[in-house]
Length: 154
Image (cartoon, rainbow, N blue to C red; front, side):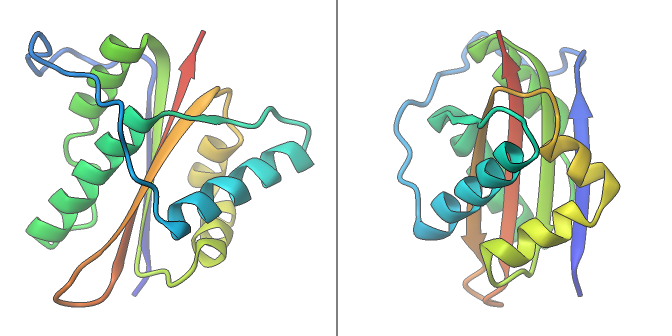
């Protein structure tokens, strides 16, 4: 089973208390995350778009969502408004988008699936400047969860 979803927001409602939000500056990227980001940037450049700059805080928020999906055995955009608000407030993003994927064994397989989905492709080709990604594996099932968040920061 392969599940993917896409979500974007340019005016998220404030539903979370962000006064205690902290900017995360450190994130350890694994090989799959670095490969996926490179593939996304290579694709963007190949069609005349700017490459995206990675931001550790966005990858951290992506990782939090991967662990949420693993812990709750769901593939969803639950909490997207809160993630989007957090990135808008702490990083000054004007627009935030999110792609998720589940059960792909390689960066190329996930990217190909995203590009074959109009909503996901729209995020990958979107008017963004920055991104972050997390790929985490469920220890119980061995299946991978992907969360890729895009942001426009002027």
